[in-house]
Structure formats: structure tokens, C-alpha cells
Length: 184
Ligand SMILES: [Ca+2]
Image 1 (cartoon, helix red, strand yellow):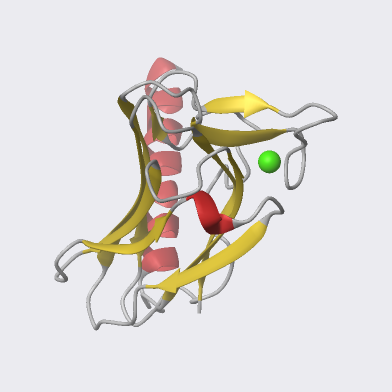
Image 2 (tube, rainbow, N blue to C red):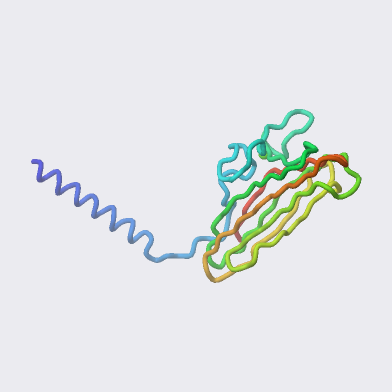
């Protein structure tokens, strides 16, 4: 009886293995569609992100999120410090990755001091700052877009938000929400 059960288990395992093998066999390229980040709007805290402390916050009536309740916030404390938020996704071969994000800027500065550098690092391309935002970014949520371009091999893409502020001369806070990663 024991032997019989074992045989059945082995057969089931073989069946599973064969099933999954044939499933992945034709290796059809994954479709270049859809939003691929698990937590683009920070509603699940820092899940899917590497973040310093205090970056993800819950909005309130005076500073609501772009959508949902949560967003990421940087600087605005008028102390000398920096904060980093980043995440990495996989870009399948022959896919283009478009990253869209929203930023709201609250400032008492009248010239460039505190800043938020938004970088995109893609396999095979030197990392680059795509946006360097400062006090003049606007008090309403504003959308920014950047993309990876395509390649014939699978790549990783890392998006980073690096905020830097200096004490004195006013303060600028940058709020970030809905950082979507869409394949096309
Ligand atoms: Ca949100």
C-alpha cells in the first residue's frame, strides 16, 4: 500500500513537471503590455521599494495624495540631509519601459537650493539623471515621463529619486505619487 502511494506521488510529480515544461516550451516572448510594479502608488507602504525612513507618508486633507491615501515625500525639513527612494524592474527583451510619475512641490525658496534628482539606470546604458526638480516645480501635482528604449535582450531598469536639501534659505518639499512602470 505504501509502495502504491509512492508510485502515485511520483507519477503526479512527473505529470506536474511535464506539464510545466510543456507550458513554458514554446517560450513565446512575454507580452510588452501592462503596469509591472507591485506598488506604484505607495498604498502598500514601501513594498517593492527601497526607501529611507519617513519617505512614505499618508496624506491628509491639506496635503492629499495624487490617488489613494499614501505618497512618498522628500526634503522640506530645512535641515542638511538627503533621502533616496529606488526600485528595480525587469524589462523583457524587445520591450520599451515607460515610467510615469507625479510630483507636487511645496516651497518657501525663491531660488534653486533643495532638489530632487530622478534617475533611470538601464542595463547597458550609463545611469543618467533624467529630471532635476527644484522649487519651481509647481504646487499642483504634475506628471513627468521617461522611457528606457528597447533592446534585444532582457534588462533591468532602476528608477531612483534622490532628494538633497540644505539648511537655511528656505525649504522645498517634493511629494511623489503614482510611479507607474508600463511595458509597450
Ligand atoms: Ca498614492
